Structure formats: C-alpha cells, structure tokens
Image 1 (cartoon, protein in one colour):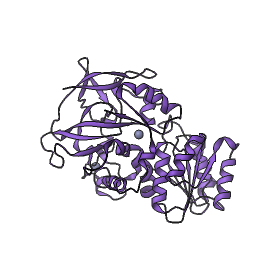
Image 2 (cartoon, helix red, strand yellow):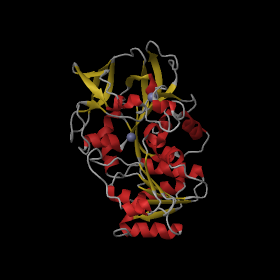
Image 3 (spheres, helix red, strand yellow):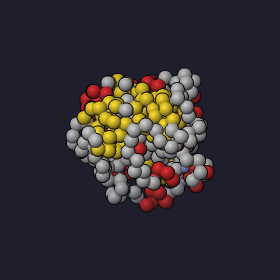
Image 4 (tube, helix red, strand yellow):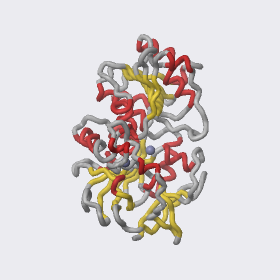
Length: 365
Ligand SMILES: [Zn+2]
Ligand SMILES: [Zn+2]
C-alpha cells in the first residue's frame, strides 16, 4: 500500500515528506494505522548528527499510538480495531529477561532484524529501532505492540511509549522511589516531566527540578515539582550545594534526563551519602565510545548509580497499566504536549524541539 511518511535521508538534511510503499503484515506482524506520533530527542540525534546511524534513508519515529488494521498469520493477541501503542522494546515472553522480573531488556531487541517493510522509489528504507511512527501506517512485529484500553485518547497517550514509560518507570521501577523521599531531576523536558509524575505517584515529598530554561518551571510545577533551580544561576558545582541545602544533606534520588556527562556527575554528587541512588536516563552523544567522569570516592560513600532503558517496564505485560493511570487522571501527560502539527510540518516541529521551546511536539495524522 502507499502511505505518506517522513524520510530522513542523511545527517543535517531536512526530512522529506513523501509517499512510500508499505508491505503488509507477514507471519507474526501487524499493520497499524498511526493516529498521533511524538517527536523525541532520540529521533533528533539522527537528524542533527549527534548519533551515528548506518542506514539512511530511514523512517524515524518511535513514539505513537494507533489502531490495528490487519494482523498477519500466527497473531492471536491482537485483532483489527484494537487501540495500540508500539514500543521500541519488544517482549517476546520467552527469553531470560522476559522470564525474569528484573529487566525489560528483551533479547529480541538486540538481535538484528533485516526486514524492511517500507520502501521508497523502489528501494528498501529502514525504520528506526524497527518502528517508524512518522508514517500513516506501519508494519511491525506484534511483540512490539502493547494493546491498550479502547477509551484512551490516542492523541494524548501517544507519548507514553517513550517519554512516559521512560520517565515514570525510572522513578517507579528502576529507582523505586519511596514515600517521603527527596528527588533531584536534571532536565525538565519530556523525560524529566514524566520522572516528576513517577516521583509524585511514588509519594516523594521534595521534588527538585533543574533546568536552564525558566519556561519549563510552570509545567513542571503543575506535574508536582516543589523546587526549581535555574542552572544558569550557579557556577561549577553550586547547584549540587543548593540541592544538599534544600534536602538537608543530599537528595535520596537523582535523575539525569539530559544526556550530559557533567550533569551525570552532579546528579550523583547531589545525592545523600550512604544511600543516594542516581538513575542515568539521558542518552549521551558518543555514549557507545566515550566515558563519563565519576569520582570513585563519591560512589564508595554508599551511593548507587543505575541505568534505565524505557523505565524498566515490560512493554506488553506492564506498560498498559500506565495507560490506565492516565485514563484514571493520575498522570499529567496533557501537560507534556506543547505543540501539535501535521506531518508536513515535521521539520518545524524538530526545530521547536531543538530550540528548547517545546516540551513535546505531536504529529496528528
Ligand atoms: Zn524517545
Ligand atoms: Zn524477550
């Protein structure tokens, strides 16, 4: 079938909106009509050149929500008409990670998958992390697809598959924030706002947000932030001192949501000695090869540093709970989406994201 999609043709090139061919679902796959898709900084890294990608052209987009239109042979869990959210992390259900309660990192995610359902001008086009939500329709393996309740507004929950699950899960499932605790969140973009949601749900009573953009303060306060620190007001590690002062010695939990080595170190140092736990969420440019500065003494003083990918929430069996929480009014996703555009405006959408003006930009198809 012919579908409209945004194609990334190379680094530092504007995306091209054009008609592409899409192959229907084969064994174990489903065809999804995407209703809304979110623009994420991870997509942007493949456009602005801060992350290498071996295969251009590529159809980006890994946040979205839609409706199943067709299922391939062997798919029994999903049927046409189901409301769904595709996620980058599959849940095959049988690998060691899927059988363990400790991790959402399904083995299937790390296996190469050469199938390319999209093609453009007669040549196959890869799709980013086997998704590609910047298209009217997508064909994807069913184990990437979470079935959600039919009354969830797709134009609101479309950011739950990356920003939502990453931030909320980092607080609830990775750090396991406890009632009454204090948290410090570096970066109040799409991820940081969701960490606030998760920390608030967990019962944290001191929620400190750190950002250089004062426009982020109001939405973060609506989500439950109790203290705002403008990073521009501090020199060196001054912000660390400020957090220690607010929390009476250090935050119980730190979250790095930007992907900056210096902030990672500050997110560790601002936590309390003895039990401070820091979760590194932001993807750093060069994160496959570079190192980050950590003071060994800082860790040896009883602190922990954890990594978290998509919030350590299992995509099919645990993620739909978050959609229930949204529908029940327990999350502030509406607060997250600052701009809505059509697919044709996708390049303007990424400019808004890059400028720091936007929290989340959503494409409505
Ligand atoms: Zn993302
Ligand atoms: Zn698995």
